[in-house]
Amino acid sequence: MIDLPYKIVYGLGWSICWITSRPIVLHAERARREGAYILASSHLTPYDVPALMKNSPRDLDFISTIELLKTPIVGRIFTAMHCVFVDRSRADATAALAVTNKLRAGRVVAMFPEGNIREEEKSVINGGNFKPGVIRLAQLGSAPIIPAVVLGTKAYYTFKAWLPLRAIRYGVIYGNPIVVDPDGEAEAAKAKATAELRQAFIDLAAELKAAMGGIERGDILRRV
Image (cartoon, rainbow, N blue to C red; front, side, top):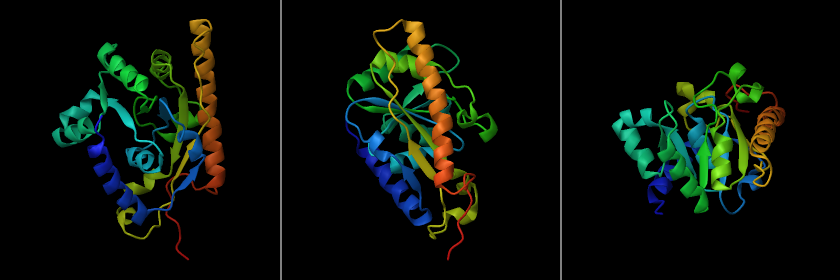
């Protein structure tokens, strides 16, 4: 699979992130593992996508909604980057098969289990619900789930954030792999993995907030 479009977008995004921010990245080695896995991330802003791309040690094949295709330029870019588009209005077997094939080919599939951008109070980082599809896809693709939390990218909603000051502080943290037991009873295995993923989001957010010194809402650092 040719990843040139991904590399081009990555390069452009990396440059912008480098001149505007000083991110805190914790436990990147957990995402550096070989083989397939699902990167399941919190989702507080659209800028979580470039933050994950810049700071993940593996190339990412994102899962997004078919609504993205309504914007032609964005749709073409994401299609070229091997994004899988899901119709959330129904059980999309075609998309599930595409994701499963990617995992069986050893790729990393990135998704936001919440299904959309959430306010922090309702986010998985505070115990909010997420869609069970992430667990099902892990079962189908025989791949572990690596949870991730991204905080602080709200700063990019402001004009000042885009100045080349390296003043933005956001954080990304990766969790330990969560495996859906392939040999256990199906429903029990799904319930166990769901509980582990829910707790992982909460624990990772708390650890990242502590590492960021309490700056978790996209504040701009004071320059010394």
